[in-house]
Image (cartoon, rainbow, N blue to C red; front, top):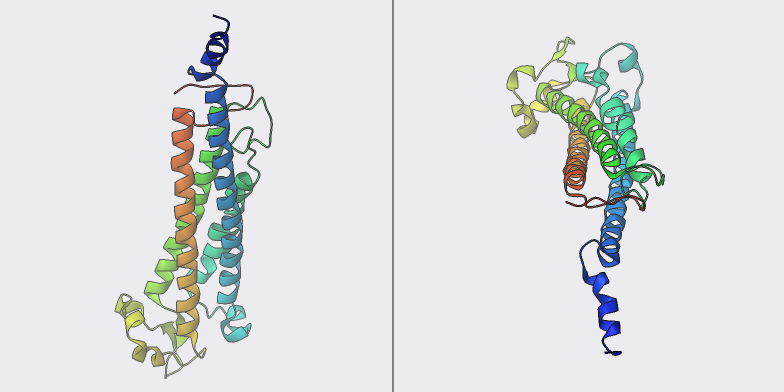
Length: 231
């Protein structure tokens, strides 16, 4: 009978809700927080790239006169890369980067912060990111479809490709209709396409965080050191 004691002493560790289960949740929380921080760092770099792309749209060929004369596409003034994909995206990025393994949900290491409250803050931050990136994508798509504001052969400033419904994007021979600024079509197509791509990636990353946050809040995939929740 003396030899059976070690076996019975190990039984509590095998039962649900014991230290083994707790270690598993802590491992899941660590993995979750690392993933969120990785997404947060990616959002920071994408936000910087969106800001740079949007700023370049104001200076075709590096010239400032077109901005001062308001000879830029109307969608450039919507600040999609500066606000939507840029500054607004830094908020969810900061929440994800500041995530702690203890709470796994962006409460900056406060042990008293409950799992569901923390998950709610994570989801709300991701929703803000979805709104900002969605705005960036929509404006960039509209800017691509309408085309740039440029001067034609008669020197008249208008949206030369507005009636093509975006067909000019597939026919580069039409781009010569824009006489000024030089290479404005290439300038707008490249930069708006970059904003569209960056915003799309941001949207996907934030959507992933929303789904993971909702799943974690409902099923208890992570919790603080002082609180435990069962699914």
